[in-house]
Image (cartoon, rainbow, N blue to C red; front, side, top):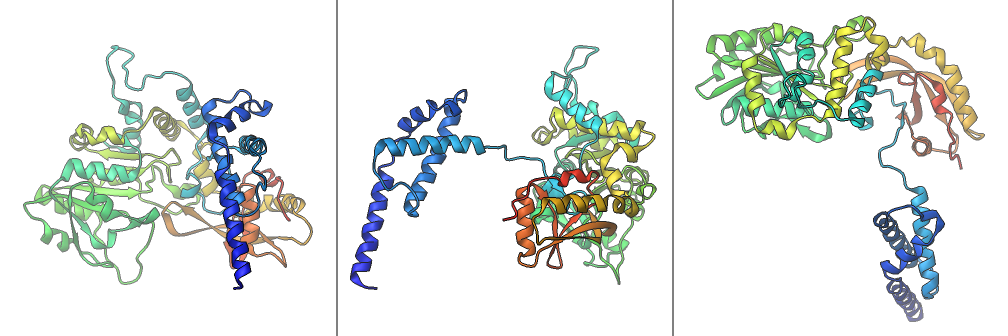
Amino acid sequence: MPKHSRKNRDADSNERAELVRAVPPIDECIRAAEALPALAGFSRSYIKVMVQRAQTELRASILAGRGEKSRDRTAMIDAVARGAALAVAADEPVLRPVVNATGVVLHTNLGRAILAESAVEAVVMAARSAVNLEYDLETGARGDRDTIVEDEICALTGAEAATVVNNNAAAVVLAMNSLAEGREVIVSRGEMIEIGGSFRLPDVMAKSGAILREVGTTNRTHPGDYADAIGPDTALLLKVHPSNYRVVGFTSEVTLEDLVEIGRERGIDVMEDLGAGALVDLTKFGIAREPIVRERIGAGAAVVTFSGDKLLGGPQAGVIVGRRAAIDRIKRNPLKRALRCDKLTLAALSATMRLYLRSRDLRDELPTLRILGRNVSEIAAIAPRAREIVAECLAGGYIVEIVDAASQVGSGAMPVEELKSVALRVTHPEKSAAAIAAMFRRARIIGRLVNDSFHLDLRTIEDPAVFAVKLETD
């Protein structure tokens, strides 16, 4: 590189550094920002955050050669104040509504189950007013927040007692910590699953303080494997429903009934982690059958855990049901307080459980079951209108086609179960599928990539008008 070029580059770099150092201090910029009509009514602490963002942007622009060329203090303060005003105008909550057109009904990254209207109303009520969360209205004494949901849960599952924590992983940890801390829990090697976010069940369980003892092999475990492993330190026999995978072919597993019999002979309780969990026979809604909690309690499991926001269709929660003696031990654990649910979760869960108990048409009232159980002809009926709306929102050159699709339950439930669906395939001769997906994401419409093309799956779309948005097609 010629010396004069290097000198010019160094001089330019030094000039930019001087300009960055010349950016006025934050107090001066805040005073200027507060004087702008657009920022009237905002708190000083909020304006300070926006000014800091504007200063950071100005410095970055200067260093990149795009920003202020003058060291004029007034001009810089004005630039920061205007930048803060623009930042306020563009400021939105991080959590925003999106359109789920991925074809994954219970999408973990998109919040899983959509709540029933009665559950939404219950959350709003609990958010807007004081409630008897831990208060006995009859005696005036302190109450137990589990009573908000326990009767309904027990009525639906046949369990003697129940308690609730913030998710199913917490339920598993709390139950094992309460019933087996420092002692052995025997589990099949084929049931040691990995759940979302690369969290492995053995790692989650290890945090309970229990000692996991794996038996059998990945594809085959026999009753004798459990029986031979039982010793004086054995506290629990654990069964894990493989809700997010299936092992097929040369396989063998021990049924819950057999495991309960082995435990009964040796005086050891059986705990089952159902994961997704189902309270009713899903085949009634055209969905593949999953183990029903009531049946697992009836088969003799002392404790069963399952999620509230998967097949149940409620809020995120971990439900623990079983024999009263076991549940009482779990409730007395100090860790329970750290994992307990707040009033909003309990309000939504109670409303959802009451739907299961009271509704004569659960499919109509519970969005999860309604969307999972949609007939493909019902989905196909809205496809032409959906295609028309999407095509109107796009500039020339885009091709929108109606195609067959396969949806999924999601959230680790029924991993091999495909739900027939219909999708819109959006293509452009000069734009990649990833670019088209990004364009729709900017409008908060989330689809999926299939064979190098962008699809909008219509299973989760009940009103195609949600596609009527402004798309930045340039």
